[in-house]
Amino acid sequence: MLSVALAMSVLLAFSQSAPAAPAARPLVVSYADAVACAGVTQAGSELEGNESARGRLLFDAALYWSLATIQMGQASGRPTTLTERDLSSARIRAVRELSRGVPTTVEKLERCVKSAPSLG
Image (tube, rainbow, N blue to C red):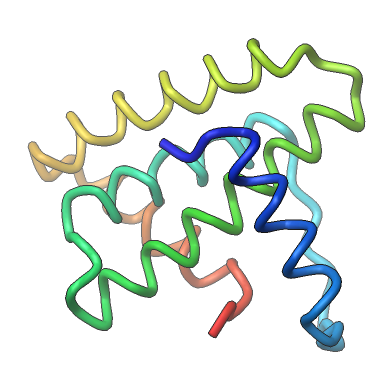
């Protein structure tokens, strides 16, 4: 799992160097949905590895959702330790479910990957 310090430094570097892409339609999600997407994309990335194009796509989606979740937690005044615990629990649960091929989790992974912006 990404550490908060690493995530924040990547976010800072990314926000300073990447031009803002115009969004066709703003994506608004709840904290719970962001945690779920972060967990399932982290799990997918962990299971796939980053050697393939699919693995790199999953890693980018996991990075995006993890950073979004951390920002949402901070913006709401949620203690960082609780956000990290939520992310860890969601990832562990998703690893188990993806390993078993739970259809709803596989579908959630695809939805979360598609809704993450391209970081490449």
